[in-house]
Length: 311
Image (cartoon, rainbow, N blue to C red; front, top):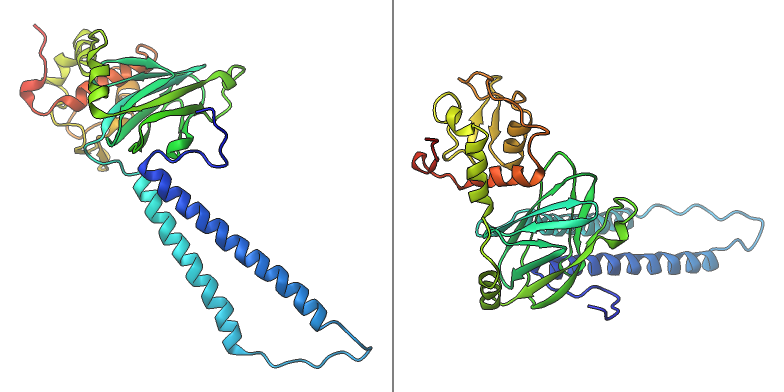
């Protein structure tokens, strides 16, 4: 980790694609910069004024005009489609991704795995496994940055962001906050440890058993009284996540993490058609960590039988 490199080490599937595009852009830019500079020097010397008589005007060559219009157009379109392909790859995580919760706060990264295992400023992941991070901020804007994976995503207060990567090389890699977040910003650093699948499972099993986010969310769902209304008077949570809901204004909304967050913190922002706005707002009553646990529990519900009911 301490070895100086001109470029960070390549340690994810995205890093190879990003570097290839970056090197191509640098190569094209360097080639045309040198070409234009050389042509300027050549034409300045060849066509410099040698007498007081102005040179005669030359007829325009349409073939040349088309050539230096068509070639840059083709190169620009090639770069656009290549860049779009890399962009869609980076921002569309696979369905089998391992979901990990990350909360940024001054000045640390709080991380929780699906099993409940918690870490601070460290992230252990298995090699070859797509990992999807659900990012949130507890206070100010932070930015989760792993140079070796070529991924970076801001964690903005009041909303969720996602980031995914698939490590393809075992080792330890730097983790930074890339957004100035206060006086201790420079100390908000950590590491990502990529392990083989068996060692990762041993690492999870070798730690004390902790409550999973879904289990903690289920307890919150009951203690906050949510289960009473959502079993009768409010929309069922079973199978809600990922579905499309019609609002009273006729709009259609996908029930993703951001929608669930908004519905919990500002319950009257969007009302599902056919239901009254009876849900109270929980803004200021639960922490970012509890909010993630609630959402994880709702995501885990697949059918009405899984919805816990209060005695």
